[in-house]
Length: 138
Image 1 (tube, rainbow, N blue to C red):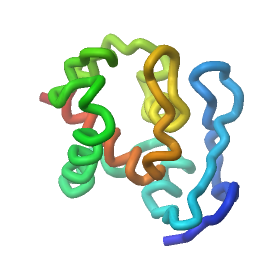
Image 2 (image 1 turned 120 degrees about the vertical axis):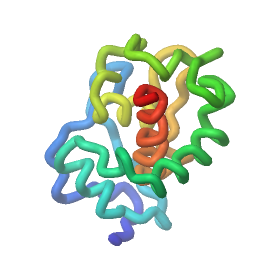
Image 3 (image 1 turned 135 degrees about the vertical axis):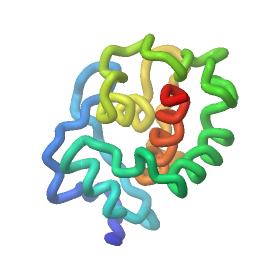
Image 4 (image 1 turned 90 degrees about the vertical axis):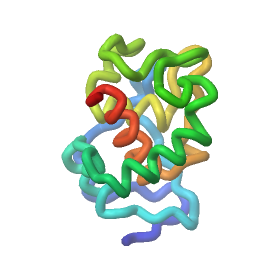
């Protein structure tokens, strides 16, 4: 697993990630202790979350979701302040893709949706996304 410092970027990144508010390129800021895992590298190359269906990653994502997301989206994902995550009625059209969901979680969206890119590292965001996917597979 690679460790990146400062504002380094993934060298093999092929996908252009955009800010949900203005479609400008999303700027990735790495904490000095952040690990760039193989899952993050694969996601940047393919746009597909390698943690989908991974029981261990989903369990980790569920814990993170409980701490970071449930206050707005509720424990079951049905939404309170934040929108319902259990159906396909997305607030933002881009949320229909894994890249779009990542962009919104990492960089924030309109209204109350805060950017979590400084609270969660990219690997953690992918795990949260894998957990959120379980809401719609029930």
